[in-house]
Image (cartoon, rainbow, N blue to C red; front, side):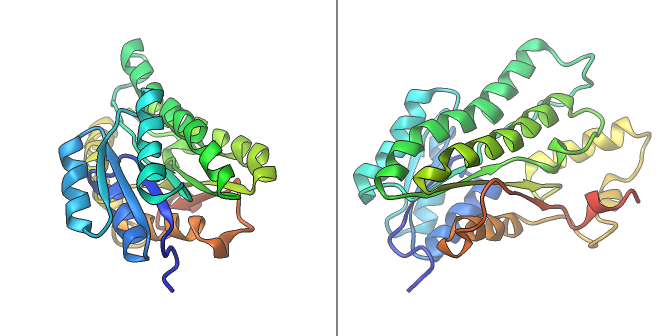
Length: 254
């Protein structure tokens, strides 16, 4: 039997990049997947590419009613919920002194409150199944300083600590809560972050700088493997953990 055979999974921010890779990996291991994204067309395309029982859903994670509706689709279509992956996120790049309050609020709404809404929507359904797993996407930016990403980094640091607190509170319900914290992965978001770093660091070659340890950037599938590992039943003793995926970058100052 596949690892997630007949398990019901919701992945937000799954219209591309890391989220799409996560959705595909769960489906390849037997899961029924709700592919949720702000871009409903992108969600539908990923679901169609996956095939089988996968369904695409348009969802704005800043709206708790829409998040509840996306989780509800999994319950209605697949009979319950076993795993939630809170992956939706945005980055608005600017020095802290130039970042507008509105842009900071927008990142908080998507990156942090989106996770909060997802947890609240999922817990009753996970509890009804006797437990389950929540995996949140944070970032190595949540533990390290870097130019131009102060607002983004603050939201990801908050996700890490929300994950820890939720893990403690939800342990009695047999719900495990963990997060992945990738560094630079081959996505459009990372491309923008590297451009900003290079501009703010006096022309340092960002690609060379961030690949000096493993010789490459991360790939969406690297993160997807970590997410499914944290969500599978074999990982039932792991909760409150931040799984850093950075090719060793944050382990060394050089």
